[in-house]
Length: 106
Image (cartoon, rainbow, N blue to C red; front, side, top):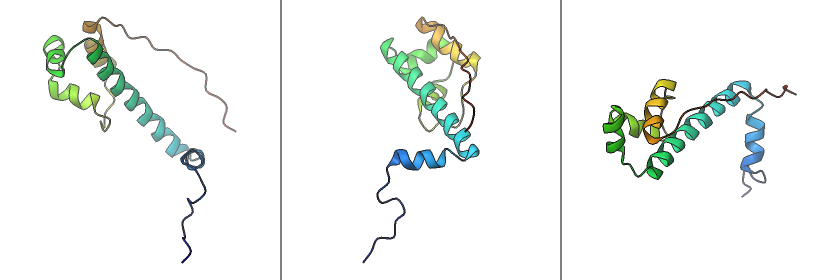
């Protein structure tokens, strides 16, 4: 019996490259990357500071459940700059943003 699977022989990277040609998919993918990076940054920084979510909540005034949602890779929201500052400043960090020129679409 012959397998009828268009993905046989292709890699995840190949499939992602194909999908990224769709502007709507590419935009959603980029937003998911941002959410993932923020969640990992909050979680990693909190742990390096030696704080639990509960302790960070007490210091920042942000509910522990909200911190857990921010740290979740499945979070639906991107935290505001104000919330990020409330999280990072008590841990001894400031937030800086930088702009990068977009490559022209091919």
